Length: 334
Picture 1 (tube, rainbow, N blue to C red):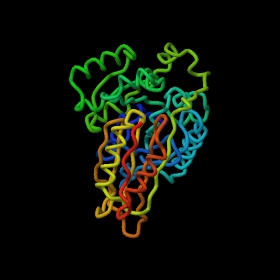
Picture 2 (picture 1 turned 90 degrees about the vertical axis):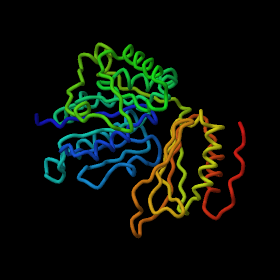
Picture 3 (picture 1 turned 135 degrees about the vertical axis):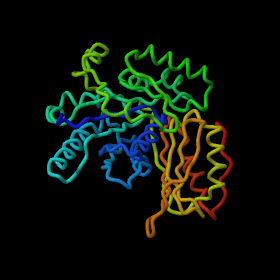
């Protein structure tokens, strides 16, 4: 019982991982949680979206996927967290690792079995996978990572059931059961799920995984499709909300299928709070975030992940959404 339980929170781009994690951090459940955030790209957004007004320890890992290029960083960070806990510098009783939406969970899980020190310090409690009811059918058809996330799950939560028909949810559930009959499947609406279904469930069974993937403990190679890329837009001047909504609305209509995930924290003229903006393909929305602190640098930062994205069109158009500047040009059609 001295081992620290670890939950791997996974799911494809835009499936609702950060929303669920925020719900966990907000609830008064008595757990002291250390969070390890991983994002695909040079800059992180999720770390700014997470609740940070309590005692949680949040560590961010950027510029790579936790299951390949920064896996060594994961081992290092877990080791540092353990050392600080032993020294009394940090106080946590569990760890949640939120992977990038492009992560294959297998190499992450491997870490707790192939690294001797980590195996003596931590216990892999479960892999929890979020599945987007709107986009999962296409994602499961096209992306190996989405299939692996479902296949390795100990718990599956279907999200965004309110934007699809009940029959679509039923068909998706049947497909998920066929892919992974051992995982308990539930729904998470707007990030709401029972804590008892997420933590201390002792769901990870190495023997069951070895039946699915006999090379689990020895196969450490993992590569992503080269055509999936990311880039960041930054702007310190305030943005005009109406211009931004018009421009992004036009972009989504033309290029939505190429935009796998886009999200950001925005500095909007006339609004004293951050505006949190998120989207997946054709679906996008915004909400009020935390207030800007006195003297804090206000900066808009947006991350785009996708295939064959119109980077120049996006950067030029977003730059013209600065309040008081020239209005954005019409979005060119493909």
